[in-house]
Length: 206
Image (cartoon, rainbow, N blue to C red; front, side):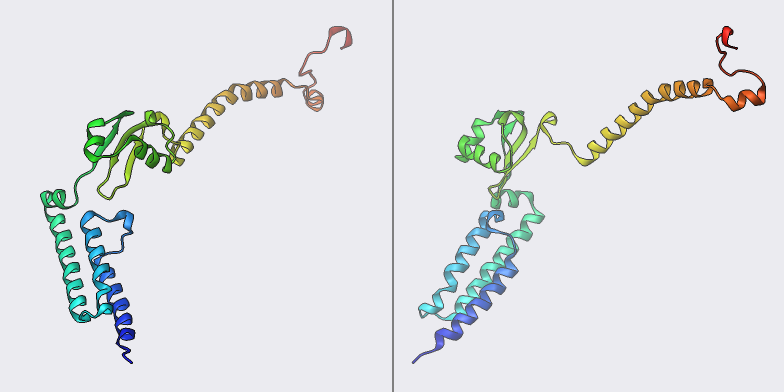
């Protein structure tokens, strides 16, 4: 009985894991078109040795695919033109709450699909979006209008400090008035010492 399939299966898993590890650790949702094509190609190649094809040829072809991908990625770092050709650029979908219908048609991206992407990011209204763009990896990036943005910790701390300052200003006259009242308050022992009244009593009761 031929047991070559056992060591071939093990070698495919190990070799495929190393190839994919070298290619990158991005998830499928973060892959560019070139990366997706390479990964599909590697997946198709890796199963061929079990069908009788030469396993070393398969791993060699897989290695060349990964090397090609790495060269393409380095080329994109060096040249914006190559990056635009291979990966593409972001496209504006919403500007100041208004849909860019031309770009939506060009990308074959429906309003329902855009709304679904926004709902997944807790955006409830297109009117509240200042900018929204479709990124090369298929994700939708967005920026809310200032009045629709949630309060940050820094803004909350600044607001809290402002409130504290206002409260201090409001309490200052009250504190001064309280001190005046305290100074005018009758002190029986002080009257004995000074032999006078701090607060003059009615004349008929002196």
